[in-house]
Amino acid sequence: MRMRKKKNLVPRMDRCGAFLIRDPYDHQGHWRDLMPQAREIRLELGCGKGRFTAGTAAAEPDVLFIAVERVPDAMVVAMERCVNAGLTNVYFIDANADQLPYFFAPGEVSRIYINFCDPWPSNRHAKRRLTHGNFLRLYRQVLCEGGQIHFKTDNQPLFEFSVEELPQFGFTLSEVTRNLHENGPVGVMTDYEAKFYELGQPINRCVATMVPWEEPFPTDRKTLKNRWLDTFAADVPEDALGKHVLAEGNYLWHIFSWELVPHLSGDEARQALREATGEKYLFYYEYPPEGTPLARPITPEELTALPTDQGAIFGSDWYVVDKDFNWTYVQTHEEECGPYFCRRPEPEIH
Image (cartoon, rainbow, N blue to C red; front, side, top):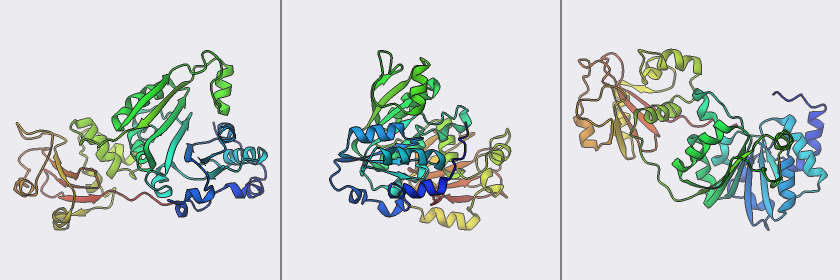
């Protein structure tokens, strides 16, 4: 539901200006300067109108809270709540969650709250869910060892997705419940949560604790495809991706042949591969040679020996990436197409 535009939004925001961090990039590694006595720093992603923000900050005045919200009309209500409550341990950022590693230094955050985020129910929009692996990788960059994610939602499919996704990215689950308030109200509620509680709608909640973890290289076709596209086609419009890449008869590398993303080709691509660093992995999205694994580590010597004339084997393309998917190289089966080299696009700094 779209929120109505608040009257006098700009002057109201100005009156709460002391709570708004306008340059969060400049605070990376220095958030404690705002509150030197804080015992820890916590984030709330999507604070809405701030009922949970104000209530939690008031209950723990020795914790520094940073609330992230993209809707100014909601944020101003949250800020006014905190001003009226006389709080001095909470600040606000107008930003997207994908910017967190640019705002916070590694290990600077102790806890992240995710309350009633957009469920993005369509499978093709799964990567937008705040509990998707793409976001969990980002949270790992800012959370301290043993840091936690506290997650609440009324959406059952999103919760089931989340309790399956979190352990796959180095988080152990605890306090898992599918009816948090079954025996009466528990903890500070958000505005949505209070309405759901009055309606008798069950609330799901879990705590995810970050543990030491190294992400394994994917070995199944679906995971490889999704991660490759999530990384290198992240900025491609969905209609173009569907038409030129995902439709039957197309290939992943069509993001390059259709000029959907910046890339190198031909000799420039080959030279970029020779200069590329990192542990290299080879995978075939379709038609791997008989007896060959779908994905495997590959040495520079093995890479040099790979055949580059694939025209006789329709669809037998091979892809190379580094373990963290910072770059990719593609040898296609079509003589006039490729090879291609592409680096992970840098996130846009807002």
